[in-house]
Amino acid sequence: MRDSLRGHLAMLTFSALVGGSFSLGAMVANDIAPAALNAVRFAIAALVIGSAAMATTGIPRSALRAPWRYLVLGAIFVTYFVLMFEGLKTAAPVSASAVFTLTPLMAAGFGWLLLRQVLTARMALALAIGGAGALWVIFRADWAAFRAFHIGQGEIVYFWGCVAHAIYTPMVRKLNRGEPAIVFTFGMLLAGFLVLVVYGWSDLRATDWAGLRPLVWVAIFYLAIFASAATFTLMQYAALRLPSAKVLAYTYLAPTWVIVWEIALGHEVPSGLTLVGVAATVVALLLLLRDEPAHAMPARTTKTV
Image (cartoon, rainbow, N blue to C red):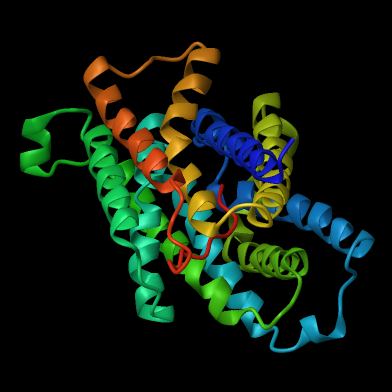
């Protein structure tokens, strides 16, 4: 099997695991405070990634320089995850995943502001099509709602989380000083856990951990192991075999995978008109997967939910 095909299979698995985080997250979002859920999730993910780092590259002394970098990145990523679960309290999983597909478009803007990265014309077209498809899903194919710009509160909350995610993407490249990716991610997860403990201490103390229903623990471990540690590993594997733009493209499969998860879990499926917007995100994926000219500069990618 060719390396590039292995990379695509890794990202296909990555997108499926990310899709599950929306469906499972929506099922438990009202059972536990977002800060408490993500504090445990970050702790487990940091333990897994830290163990993997010690078993592979080790923790070089150089990685300990300027620890404020991990604090900045951890705070940004914590903002994304906390707002994601705040939004999932009211937003439908498919609609929230459509908001997530706006992240590459915003990341391209922040990439230009922070790194002066320039998109190719085809990538810009793909991002525009994907963004339009996302808006179609977010407004639930309701033209009157679109003209009135009536968006659900959950989608608005999660949108600001996606802004944080979009800032995080170029900030990783700006703040990394040559540390191995797995070590850099471990530092971010550890710093994010500390931020969550400080920010969510009252939520952590108020949570009845023994009284949580089993599904909440299933969601926590899924998010920590599969939607964090595993997706990081898959993305790093693919990034060594595919151009960054192709890795980024798989973000657009999130709504499609969420629909698959919703069907598997026996939940309501979106209407046919809404699926038109999902189809547009798949078109954006196909455009981004086409080979770019050798001189093109793709956007840098990093780990997602």
